[in-house]
Length: 125
View 1 (spheres, helix red, strand yellow):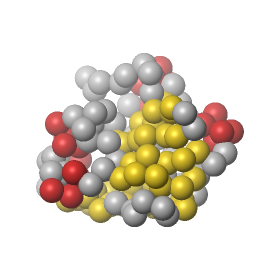
View 2: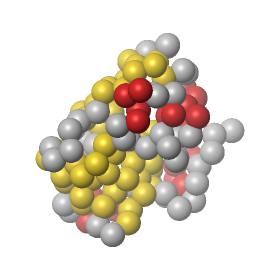
View 3: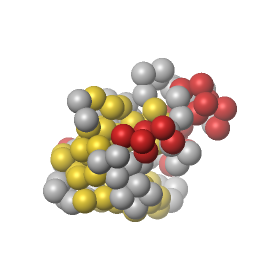
View 4: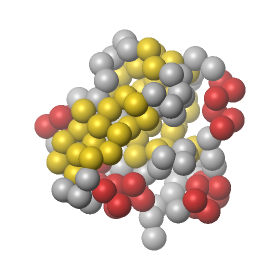
């Protein structure tokens, strides 16, 4: 069974979101990394880019497939996890920790209401 921390919010695209001080850190869920298999390459946006909710913002390549990464909310990309370039397997090893993808400055707090809590996400997986 996949790990689904209670303190995070989730999208139907199997991404997690941690909200703190007007920013949202996010990445892919344990379920997503398990389905993808061994992740071998990650392409991320640049810090400073403006993104809209639902925009494709990156790509994950695994031994099984290539998947797009979508922004769960709108805002400015404040930080990206550059460590993923050299060590994309961090997304497999620690999806809720060292394998995070990026931090976005929240533009519209109301968009957070569309995210699921852990219980709702558990029903999806």
